[in-house]
Image (cartoon, rainbow, N blue to C red; front, side):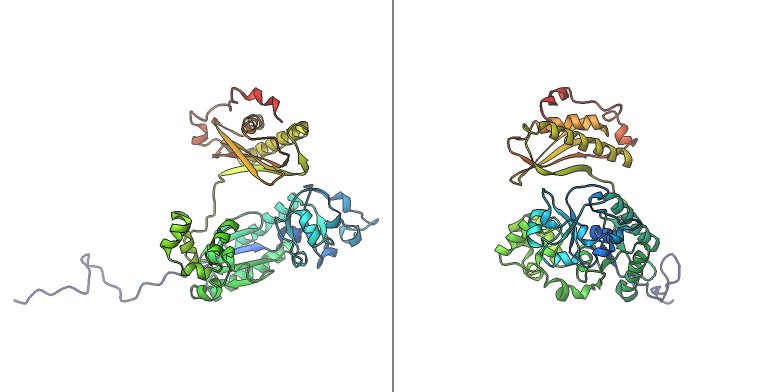
Length: 430
């Protein structure tokens, strides 16, 4: 009688064992696409005579800039003389730059900079207002072009997106460069606009890479490139490390991502807190597992405006009241157009000393009603100091739910929105 032998050829369910190795999963390729000076580039399509000149977009928000449209009889916008456009040195009022052309950036002018400060750096720059209708049109167009090529796209605002190249045909070729080049050309053909694309193993590095070769550039970062391409960068280049954290890192002698990676994880947690310290350690080593999210629900919606001059709650009460009512009405329109309701209503103030105050209040029923937003916002205003002049006023609705959803229609959120009992007392405020 022969001794029993181990059955090494078949598993217990009697299926044959394949001698072929399992195929390796494709390498993760995530792209970050950033339109080049988007707001300014859209305006240069309208005014090609300004190409190559320093131009900033900002100031008063109006949809049509009639003030500079001195069209010669029978001419087009491209025929307007360059001398007819307003210059930054002549701008009077508050506000910040939305974006600037690359010739303007050479003077140190950039996004979010105050217009008055920018005027000192580049007084000869041409200033144009933001045309939001035109911006939204081009934003929708370039994103639709991307979706037709690579459907897994995460919308990150009017001018930037993340794209998952991993399983897209051609997405692995040359590290993703071939697909990036295809998308660049498709966007240029459809809009006349250029973009810069970074391709990397994850979102974190892809966003950094998209800045490497601006404008109209493509940068591919492989896993092995972390030490050579990422570690020499300043810590501030990491999305999520702001000015305050960067300043604190510098006090410890940490200026580059590589120096951050050299610090022990426990040391970072001890000095920056459990969550932030652990996150810093991960990003310094290029680790980021966040997926590309094709659809995400907004957490809140808001409207705000920066005044051309400081306004005071007493002396300018009527003007402030009209502005606040308008903001609430426009925010309600936004909510209704996008199909959302919310139950946390808040306000935001920026004083003349640039300090910010925020307050919010949660009501018992979901709403997208402008009057309710105005009333509850007025209650929030009663809880902030109003002695100092104001530079900015904003209103926000949070804790959003889809209108008509079970959450919005639950007993706590059913029926018409109910205003707070003491809403009438807000009449004394603006």
